[in-house]
Length: 109
Image 1 (cartoon, rainbow, N blue to C red):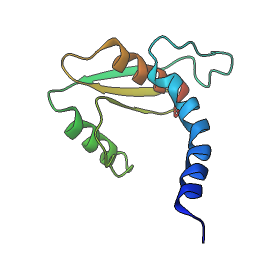
Image 2: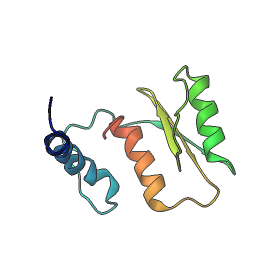
Image 3: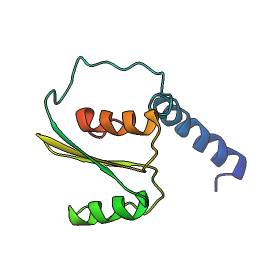
Image 4: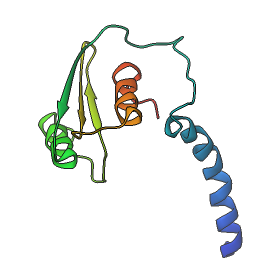
């Protein structure tokens, strides 16, 4: 039997690298490399909606992805040649830029 304090220590030790890696995509000023850009030419569609959650869920299910199951402020769906971004009627540059980065780098975080 592992004591509770050791379980917590192990959990924290395993999660720290994940938290450190995830930090970059949350920082709107973090630089990233374009060296291994998977895609450099896309047709982009921007859907603006009053209900981002419902639209993102519907778009996800329409594409056979099953929905999100958690709250989103924006979302994007991409293929090799096109990308659809969904935002609110008043998005931030961070949300739009984050989703645009998904268009080019796909599942980067």
